[in-house]
Length: 198
Image: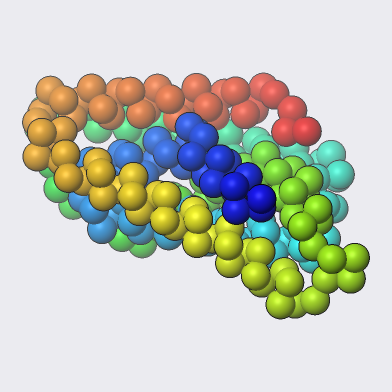
């Protein structure tokens, strides 16, 4: 049941999905997978924080939660603006030389870690599947399941869109993708800033 809920959460459209798609199309399969690894690292961080009680403190501390929310919103808008800026180039770089694997990993990690909804999600979900007095192995098992599902899903997304890269990196199509993902990321950032994470 825990795996099913996490799978639905991973598959729901959002900034993580848009980010993996863009990195896969712009820079290739390896970059998409690096972004997926960053997202999975963020999921592990939130799962571990929820199990240890840290995420609960964040979720119930209005000032901290607001700070995380605003930082996350600002980062999403930044990524969206970067995508739009790339459409202004006369010939967008089809291989994404400006974006290395560490940068793709960082984008995935920060997009997930700076999403306060992830904190609320794990605070509400994880305790329901842990025993009354959870041990380290209990926590690690559930965190490992969440990470494995996240990695599997986003690696599949990266592989799919990377396989279509030859078609999708044509200049006109590439600009459309950059504009679409840029618009989605900016809209998600604005929505995150304007709404409550609770």
